[in-house]
Image 1 (tube, helix red, strand yellow):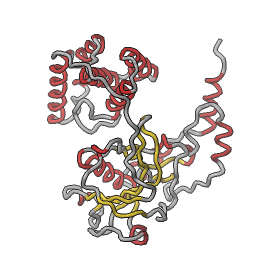
Image 2 (tube, one colour; image 1 turned 60 degrees about the vertical axis):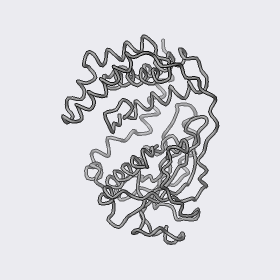
Image 3 (cartoon, one colour; image 1 turned 180 degrees about the vertical axis):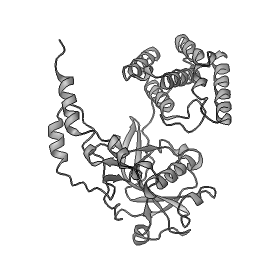
Length: 342
């Protein structure tokens, strides 16, 4: 579970609960059926078997229900129990004293909120389709903040963000899939040639053995046969490097106003040895954050982890092997699952 702060929604898991709930509420589904199906879904996934995800689920669900005027008594009781018996805060004892204190305050604030009078129920109109309008090849520049610049290549002053594809994020939201580069110095590229000279940021990697995923257990043999036709080239570490990011430009409000339009470089040279996942679901999604700083921070992390190879797996081949799920083992597992139960 990715966590970047002490707030109730400052984790991937909490945001997933919130976004899933709001998606269905905004579509006009019944309050109780949304709640019950959400609980059933997360329980079915086994998330309630672990304290950290179980507590975060009830806290996130209670908070978003209260904010929308739909707080269910059972959800309220579960969330308050996590706070009042100290069980959720107990999980933060291994953190720094400051982090622990901030989480304690966040929980106290949530408790006060849940015990306060319920908000008036919010009625949502059917959302309109939204896309930020970026064309394939469009390049935008985000200036790197002064405090973050030393953590990138010292010459780089901008993140260069180029649209290469799009994907559905919510039924009414389409988001761009982008490449990210570091600028050469403080000047923005004036043409494709100058853009091509800038360094791509690698965002992740896939094990060669895992290249066919995701598979569903249905027509997998046909899928594997089809995907086997695509040439995949490993890098010097024996993995398939990825460079694409799904950028969550879900509405005009979240896109930094400081972005600079550079131009359209649709004919730019793609990253060397790039592996493009067969499903867009496998492309990492990143949020802008305030003024683009969350995105900037994630790109800095990826630059260090992959471009500079500071991620431990690059220096420890044994760790790399742990991420491999052989296709033969997966197929055997699916055969077992498909056998009728007696």
